[in-house]
Each structure stands twice: as C-alpha cells, then as structure tokens.
Amino acid sequence: MAAERTLPNLWHATAPAAPDTRPLSADISVDVAVIGGGFTGLSAALHLAEKGVTVAVAEAKMIGFGGSGRNVGLVNAGMWTKPEDLIATLGAEVGTRLLTELGDGPSLVYQLVEKHGISCEAVRNGTLHLAVGPEGLKDIQDRERQWKAFGAPVEVVGADRAGELTGAPGFAGALLDRRAGTIQPLAYARGLARAALAAGAQIYTETPLRSAERKGDLWKLTVGGGTISARSVIVATNAYGDMLSRTPWTSYTQELTILPYFQFATNPLSDNIARSILPERQGCWDTGLVMTSFRMDQQNRLIFGSVGRLDALAEGTHRGFAERSLRKLFPAIGDFRFEYWWDGRIGMTTNNLPQMHVMAPNVFSISGYNGRGIAPGTVFGRALANHVTGEPNALPLAETALTPDPWRNLKSAFYHAGAQAKHFIDRRF
Image (tube, rainbow, N blue to C red):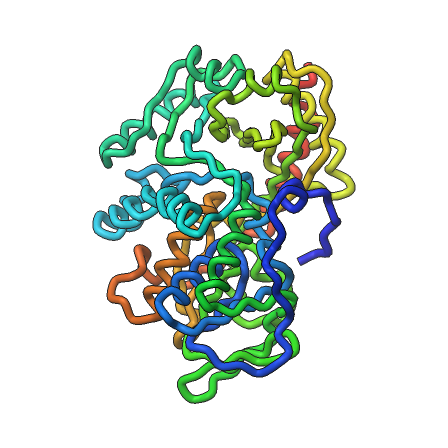
C-alpha cells in the first residue's frame, strides 16, 4: 500500500483514549492468534476470551488503524445487496441465515456497547437511505418490499417527511430502517479492545505479521519482535491486508476492489442550526450514482462523505464539492469551516458479498464488507470465534474458493478518477 498522508481525523480527535497496549517482544503461546485489530478481530478476541480461550491479537499499527477508525459510523442492518439478490447468489438456506444474522447485527453491536459500557456516541434511531429522483425512489421501494418480507421494521417515507427528518429538501423519499443507528466507530473499536483485554485477551500493537511457519499442528507466527504459537489463526485485515509487503495470507486481497471514501467534518454548529439538521440524529446515505453520506456527531459537527481519495491532487476538488453540497442541502447552514478530513478504503467484491476463505489449515478469513463494516464485522468476529472453537455451523457464510479479480486495480483507479471528475463539476451551477 502506498504511503498515506497524515490527515486530521475526527474520530481520532474525539474518541476516548485507547487502552494501554505495547508491541510484542517475546515468544508466546495461545490457542488462537488474531491478525488485525479492527471490528472483526476485536470481536473475535472478545468472544474467544469470554469462552476462556487464550487469544492474542497482533495489530500492525494501532487499534482501529484501518477501516474501523475511518468508517462513517453507520450501524447498518444487512448488506448492500438486496435480500432477493443475496438469496439468488447464496441459495435459500445460506442466504436466509445470513440475512437473519446480519439483519440482527445492529442489535449485537448495541448489546455489546451496553454490556461493556462502551462510550461511543451510540444512537439507535435508525438510518435513512435517501432517494435521488424517481429511479432512486423506485429502488428504495423495492428494498422496502423485500425487507418487509423478512419482517424487518423498514418504511419508505415520502419527500415531505424525508425533508423533515433530514432538514434537506429535495429528496424523493427515504427508506427508514429502525434496526440501525450510528456510533463513533473508533471509540467503539477501542471499547471492544478494552472489553477484550478485561476478559483476558492479549492485544499487541505496532506488531506486524512477518512470516508464518507450520510446526506440526501449530502455527508459529513471527510478529513484531517476537512470535506467537497458536493452533488456529483468524486473519481479520480486510481492505488493509496488503498494507505490508511479504506478509503471508494476503492473497484474498486480490479479489477486493478498493473503493476510496473520504469525509469532511465541520466545526460544531450553533444549537439553532443543529436542531434543524437530522433532528432525530439518523445517519444518511443516498442512491446517487456517486454515493454521498451525511450525519451529525454529539458535538453538533456535520459530517459529509463521498467516494474519492484525499491525495494531494484530489483533496481540493473533493473539499470544494463537500462545501457546495452542504450549502445546497442545507441552505440555512450559514458560515462553517471544515475542522477535520480523512479518507479510508472499502473492500468491494464482485458479487458485493463477503467472502470466507480457509487460507491454510486452521487459518480463516472473512473479508469484503462492501461498505458495511461495523455490524457485519462484529457478527463475523463472533462467528469466527465460535467456529475455531469447534461450534458446528457457527459461520453464516459458506467457504468459497479464492477468485482473484483481474480488473480490480483498474476499477479502483476508475472509481477514484471518476469521482474526482464528477465532484469537480457537481453542484457548481
């Protein structure tokens, strides 16, 4: 992965401090080694430790360095793929189970927040999928029909109600999903880490995986300045799996197209203005060709995001687009400035569904959340913990063969360049 620019990230500025961790500098033995300290890895570690299983997490950078510290913070139910399409791809039995478990995913997240007292600005008033024009309205109406067939508490509201809920006139309607909500994502990740440590897990930061060697029925992992010997390994690095060169078990990244996504956060808005924007504090995203999102935090900052990477050439274009968009969406917003801006990587698969792989004997990986990292990451972390400890049918996802996407780099470059071109033009006139 190319060197990243250091950008002012709101989540880093406002999350409670991370628990004390250190690099591994010794040789240790545990039942399960987890590679990656994001939502999936930390959920796995927490659930393993609560079972009395010895577990060590090796994180190459810091807790939540990847998508977990750059997320929009929408705790969505299900996947981006519509229920009927998901079942057509996976089959009725597997598809129905996956829809059920991921539909209940937000409940697991908020249960963990409450159980472990995680301070992460948790709000569960639903999310709004906003319809752009007649085609967008048709899309969310189809999603409503399909989810209601599964008994989900979703509802399409008309243009007037969508305007009331967002404070932004002009949308054709919105799909309100009452299962969902918002959190401060890095605060949630750090809270999971703190809970896992309290349950007995070991977490090592600045501890990259360098090599792996099979020794009988154990894996000996060279990580940081030490080694971890473990019977089972969970690889939980998702879109950041290729961050280090010559790291084992990164072949799955060849089936992920990287979709860059940026966010800008304003200064805290006045109470008068803040009350008129998302008064119930739902998080939002739209059906536009190049998706945009917006939400509020508990300090009354308005956070706007869209597709694109904030490299030196593109940052000005995306910043201008974000400013024009907020003024168009919220004409009464008045003067504001951007205090924070950051970007991240979304791992997209060809069928828009996560993929489960057995990378080697007793080495398991689930990746490709397609922009739905919080609830699925938490659910799959728990499922992997149950799976490696021998629970039958623990995984709501069947193992698939690794299928590299030869067009992934081209598609990723297209997303970046295409979004930059569109944002240069959009809402100028």
